[in-house]
Image (cartoon, rainbow, N blue to C red; front, side, top):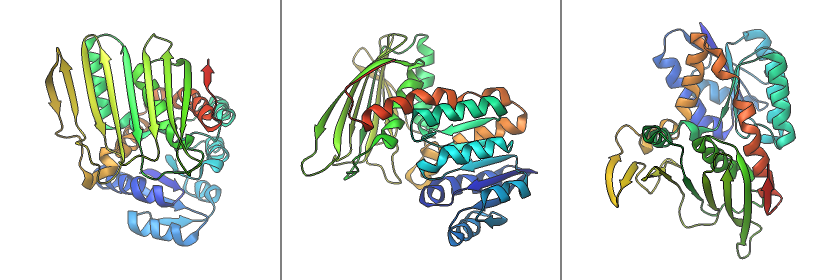
Length: 327
């Protein structure tokens, strides 16, 4: 049996990771949801009952020693993620870690160091990388045969007035880096105060190391919940509305434009509001990770921590309200 354990049974885990794991175990032969763990015993018991885990615990180390799983999914508060992930790697357990990988760049680099010492396969759960819409844009870009020239990413939220929005903004920063296929060479930030709130709107203009120009707009106090992506490459422009909740307001499809006309529109098989854990990329990020482990293809599961350091580092500039990043 391919045994999976879950560390952390809170709201986010219950919303997307639990349904994803339950579906994976139901559709794939030889998979056991062995045990789940949370310091809140009642939460662990509810999670186990809801998603089909055989046992539950309040001590993740004891659980991992007993179960000896083939993989662990770690979804814990950001201040705990680095320490717990390092423990799991030192126990030799392949893990998928919910973003961001560490509370700051120092912790992100610590994860890289421990991973290199242990050689443990891993994945960072940057779910945008696995959204069907973003993957479709990636495929269309590949057909152009040239890297993107311009990327514009927008992130709108409703009444998200927390002072530090960086742990959500990191999604946009990572998605742009992923699609550009290159690190940020530099970025300049500007901010707009939101009346009566500590939160701010965030605007980022960047240049990537391969010459791609990028723009990111993050507005946490907007009138709608939405994320959009525009990419220009070799005379074509691709536009995608990404699913950001169970009931998003924009059609979550992908359009291709050439010479002022829409030449392609894809919406089928990109997921629906009834299966947000699929449309949002959560199912794919886990299923592909487990499948690579089961197939013995561990070489492709060794770089996520390293590729995640810069997005975490750039997001810290937003947390501090800095105005310029230079690599």
